[in-house]
Structures are given as C-alpha cells and as structure tokens.
Amino acid sequence: MTIDDHKSHLITLGEFLKQFKLPGAVQDENIPGNDKFFAEMDEKINAAIHYNGWFTRENIIFSLQQWSEALTHQNLKLWLGEYDLSNSGGKTVGIVMAGNIPLVGFHDFLSVLVAGHKVLVKLSSNDRFLLPVIAAYLMNLDSRYENRINFTEGKLENFDAVIATGSNNTARYFEYYFKDKPSIIRKNRNSVAIITGIETKEELEKLSGDIFRYYGLGCRNVSKLYVPKDYDFDGFFKAIYSWNPIINQDKYANNYDYNKAVYLMSEFKLLDNGFLMLKEDSSFGSPIATLFYEKYNDENELKTLLKQNEDRIQCIVKNDAGKEEVSFGQTQKPQLWDYADNIDTINFLSKL
Image 1: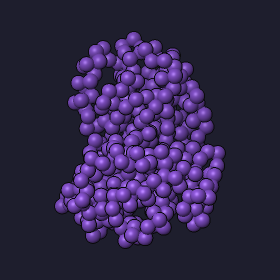
Image 2: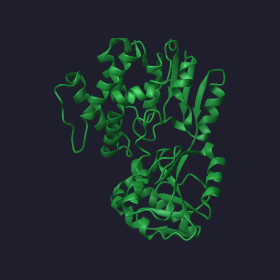
Image 3: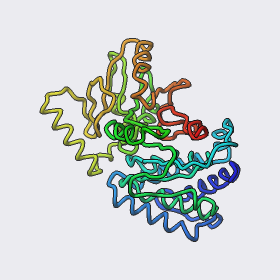
Image 4: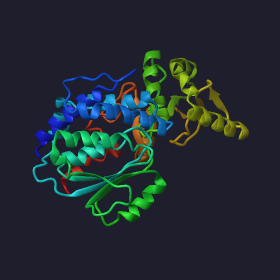
C-alpha cells in the first residue's frame, strides 16, 4: 500500500467523520461506506456516552470534528512530505492506549499504518467503542487493512515495537515490561499558560477552552497559569464565565465539591467562582475543577524555569505564541505534525 493510498483513504475517513456534528449527525449520501457504518458510528457514540460519564456528546463530537479537519489532502501532504518511508514497514507495533479523552491514541494508530507497519491495539476500557468502528471503516475502504489492524484484550504479544501511554506509575511498568523492544513510553504531562496581563477578554475566552475542554483531563489542557506579580484575576473570571454550565456535569461537580472541601479543611487560600478554584501552587498538575497559578517577576526567568521542566510539560500556551508555544484556544486542535512529548513518532517508526 503506497503513501498515496493511505492519504486517499484518510481523506475519505475525514469526510466520514465530518458528518457527526451537534446537535445531530447529518448523513451525506456521497460518502463511501455510509450504508454500513453511518448508523453504527452514531450508535457507538451513544454507547461511549453512556459507558463513560466524562465522554459527553459535545466532547466526542469535538474530537471527531477536529480529526475531520486534520485529515485533508493539504495537511497529510505537509505531515508526510518530509519523510522517506520507502523502506519503512513490515513490523508489528503494539499500542497501549490511554482513555482520558476520546480517541486520544488515534494519532499513534494512524502513524503506524502510514509508516507501513501492522498495528496491534490494546484499548483502554474507558475508550473502547469509537476506534474499532473507524478501523472497520478503513478495512471497508481497502481490504489490505484487514491483516494490518488487530485489537487485543489481553496482554500484548508477538510485536516488534511498542507505543504506550499512561501515568507515571504505569510508565514504570511499561519500561520494565517492554525493556527489550524499541519503544515510546509516555508519562504524565501537563500544559501551562503564560499570562502577561494585557490580554483582552476575547483572548482569555479562547484560553478558557484550553482549560475546560474535556473537563481538563487531557495532557494538552492548561492546568496551571503563570501570572504577573500583581495580576488581577477579575477579568480572567469574567472571560471564562461562559463555561459555568460545566458545574452541572455530575462527575465534574463531585470533584469540585471534594477538592474544595479538602482545600478548606487544610485552610488553603483559594479564589473561587463557583465552578473553578484557583490555588497558588508550584506544581504543574492540578486536580479537576482546580487551576494552579504561580506569580512571576521576569519573563526570561520564567522561560528558563519552564525549559528546566520541559520533560513535565506538554504545551506552553501564550497569546503571542512563538515557534515552540501554542496560541490561546489551540491546545485541543493539534496538527498532525504536533507530536506528543515532542517525540517524532513517524521518525521512530521509519527506523524500525
């Protein structure tokens, strides 16, 4: 199967995913495979919503729409054009997927396929409905995918390399279990935002999506703010208020209530607007419904601090983003070439 074959199929997949919108899916009769897979995809979206309380329709549809926008001819050309994959392929690559947000391991799945390898997927129990439908859709487009895509519910066996994503604790297990195989092992990471104090309300509204999308469960979600020494949070709270309905989600509200009780009993100083707590803290990873913040005096010193901790940070978010930063509102809209942990997955796969 050539790179052009993969591109063609992924573009069609993007058109298929584009049909699933809010408030409801709208079928396009021109999309191949709809007779077999449109209703099934809609059904599995509903199944995922009922199975996992964090997977709301809005968040699942957001993920599908982002993938539909990513899988275009231009994006695939830009992504794959810089690689020589002529000698790549023929291996079996295991993927241990996380389940914190919908389709979080999909990029790894695509990367293995376009690099010419077979993929052996171990799904998270929290996100087990969507990817099998997408895989079946690709097989329907081209039967050559049938012997290149497999799922397993047991432990990974008979593989040549592995990509595994989990917590810091599970990463230690992965590193031991997969020590004899080429691997990419991903651990906990968090994203931070730098506020200068001159942002407009509209700019901070964009940042609020980076904080609240997927309830803050993704590694690309902003979990900590760096603010100027005398920063007034009043404007920030006003800008994020449109997200206040998030407190009506039971699992989020339970975390908000629990963490607030813990903080109050510990007599921590908090800023609270009824659906988000701000706590001054030097840590990077904040609990659900909490956003840590830390004050800075000099932006150059802050950049040095972040550089020293780059192995713990997924994204640095800034309104006037530089080359290695992400603009407000863009953390959950990564491009195909935005690799997790800054590890070039295609380069890794091409050298197996």
